[in-house]
Image (tube, rainbow, N blue to C red; front, top):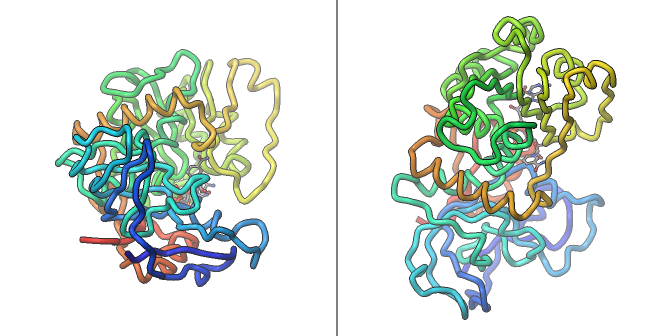
Length: 341
Ligand SMILES: NC(=O)c1ccc[n+]([C@@H]2O[C@H](COP(=O)([O-])OP(=O)(O)OC[C@H]3O[C@@H](n4cnc5c(N)ncnc54)[C@H](OP(=O)(O)O)[C@@H]3O)[C@@H](O)[C@H]2O)c1
């Protein structure tokens, strides 16, 4: 089979296409014939590593997210899974041979999820990292829901910073599905258009408008949850728009900038500053998040493509390095690698 891997950290050109034996599933694993491999910033950050040129031994097959069809199962796994369309999450996490940038990937059984016929392989490969992260951000607020579904965010206001980003888009779609009032920020009219297509009720252009004034006009009592991509840059704004018992869910690090927040204005509303990393989130939460995201797919509530505010960019497997470079340079939308048809 054809597989992409890297044997040292560095630029996208460390990604090499090679031939490997089709692996046999071990106990508790399934083998997935991968159709689409989804690329996220985490994939290029892992590839780049901390030190350029450092050996990666054994070589790593990149990309956490993907979709395809189960074509073999290991001992202890029901043969009923054979032939099932699935999406996979965290396939490469602590698994050098496990990434989705290859024709067949072995994945632990609990990390493959049924992809119903309403969901395309493109959608399936776009779910893992962005949607699970968005789910976590939407379920860490005091008194807020721990499960997502229709009505669970009724009467609540969510502010999604960066609504044209992949996680931002997922947060908008999920919050909308849950009947929240959704406000989002973007940096251009083009991105405003995408965020509106994702389902945001209110879109604020943070380069051209006063975000605090706009959010306070829409939500005079402040917002319940902020899904924050740029914590250091936006800390001032977040402090001024957070409502009583609200939370700021921070899932990105602004390139390493430290966050500074005033204490008293956050004490008064009993606000929460919650840091989020999808890999180390509690296992019990993750199981719930996978279930809820699946339910959203089945409901037809989450979509991909320009009409859903998430333009798709396809690359064939042999151009996986270009796919990584596209994500690294901030491609707007979702970058997918077409592994097999
Ligand atoms: N913690 C986790 O578990 C987790 C999970 C997924 C992703 N992440 C991280 O989260 C980040 C985003 O991931 P992604 O896949 O969504 O990337 P993406 O698709 O590139 O989206 C990033 C978005 O952030 C927006 N943005 C940047 N600065 C902003 C600001 N000051 N205010 C509002 N929006 C701003 C960008 O648009 P403009 O620049 O035009 O505003 C862009 O739309 C990456 O660093 C990724 O590694 C972390």
